[in-house]
Picture 1: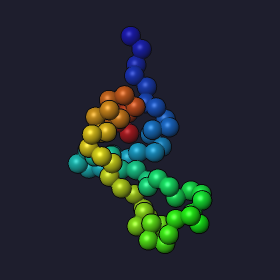
Picture 2: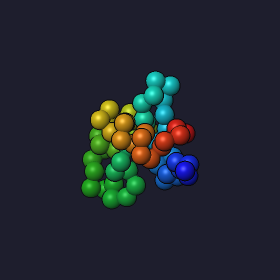
Picture 3: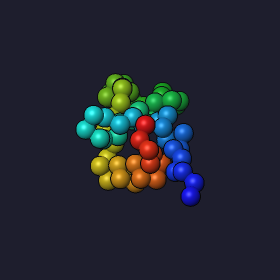
Picture 4: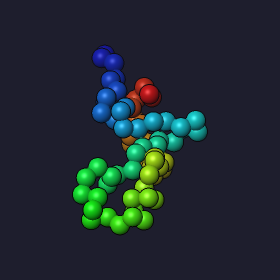
Amino acid sequence: MPKMKTKKAAAKRFKITATGKLKHGVVGKRHRLMSHNSKYIRQNRGTVVGASADHKRIMKKLLPNGL
């Protein structure tokens, strides 16, 4: 039986916190920023913890061995 491989694209985008949650960069900050106001850009700095509903799906399918 072959080993489960980690999806490298997901490994580069997500990090696992100490409590087991997934954190990721904020979306919508790469280009076309002139159409966003300053409040949107300012509030979306840094990283955020993802929705708990997605944790199980991402951890099981994309990151079976953790990071």
